[in-house]
Length: 97
Image 1 (cartoon, helix red, strand yellow):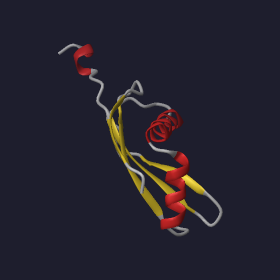
Image 2 (tube, one colour; image 1 turned 135 degrees about the vertical axis):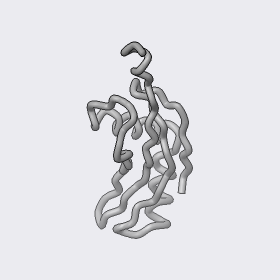
Image 3 (cartoon, helix red, strand yellow; image 1 turned 30 degrees about the horizontal axis):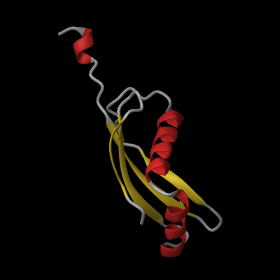
């Protein structure tokens, strides 16, 4: 088997939610314990996931629903985003709360 045939780009699925504190809302990305792909820059894929979330969901409506429906200390799940190592969105399963 050649080296090229072993380097198959395997996508990774990231969970996404909004965590609530007393004074802020924070988008959180759950990273698999073992990444299948060659992500080297943690910030890069987290930023890419954030871009996908806000491209698919209305930020204002989503964050408004989170603040209405949850309390400080809670994390509201928005779904998942599956990305290839090059940042291509393979699939997503996102929904406003």
